[in-house]
Figure 1 (cartoon, rainbow, N blue to C red):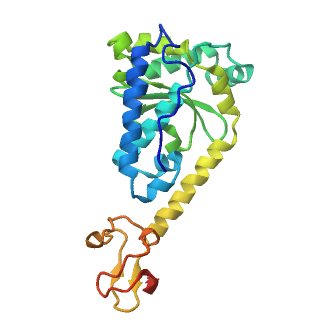
Figure 2 (cartoon, rainbow, N blue to C red):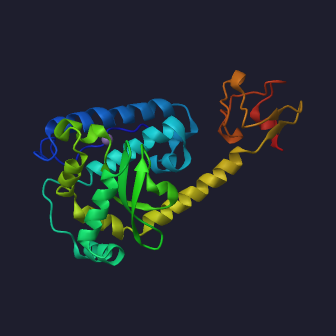
Figure 3 (cartoon, helix red, strand yellow):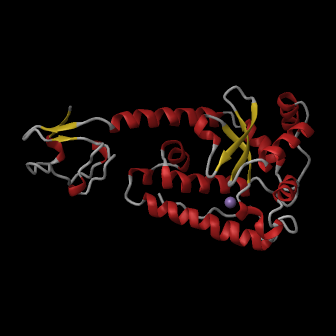
Length: 265
Ligand code: MN
C-alpha cells in the first residue's frame, strides 16, 4: 500500500489569520509530506506494506510507528479544523458536561493538557470502551488508540505547528485552534460506535499474528530449523519475518529444497 498526502478539506489560506497559509505550507505541505514519504520508504517490501495505517500504529515500534502515527495524527488534526466553526452539537455538549462538569471545564482542562506537554506531542480528547471521555497527553507521535481509546479530537503541540505564527507562545496557538475546531466532526466521531470495537479486534488480530510469527519451521529433508526471530539474513529474510511471509521462491539454506518441504515445529 502506498500512502499519499491526504487532501486538506479547506484552502491553504482558509484558516487565516489564526493559522497562516505559510504555516500550512510547511506543516501540511512539508512536514506531513515528509512523514508520508518516510513511511512509504520504510514499509517497502515489508509485511506492513499491505495493512492499514491503524494496524501499523497498533503493531509497530520505532521509525515505522513514529512515521505512521505522525501521518495519522496530522491527518486527523487537519481534518478537525474548519474555517466556519459552528456551535457545538447538543450530543457533544451533553457528553462533555457529563464527564467534565461543563463545556468550560473541558475547555480549561484540554487547553491546560495541551499547554503542559513537555516537548513535542499531542493532546487528545478520546473515548474509552464504555463511552466515557478522557483528555490524554501523548509525547512525540503518541496516539491513544494504542491503549484502546477512540480518538475524537487532537491538537498538535510540536513547535513546528505554531512557531511561524506564534513563535514560542504555545498557549495563544491553542486558543486559536479552539476557534477552528470542527465540533460537528467531533460529535460525529463520538457517534461512530464501531471504531473502538474495530480497533480492539485489530489489536487481537495482531496478537494472533505475532504468535504465528513466532512459530519455528523445520526442513523435513535435512532438519534445518527456521527461527523467525533470526530470519535468514543470508537468504534475504530479515529477522522477525514470519515463515508464512517468506517469499515462495526461498529455499532451505542448508539443503536447497523449497518452502513446501518445511513443517511447523
Ligand atoms: Mn505537526
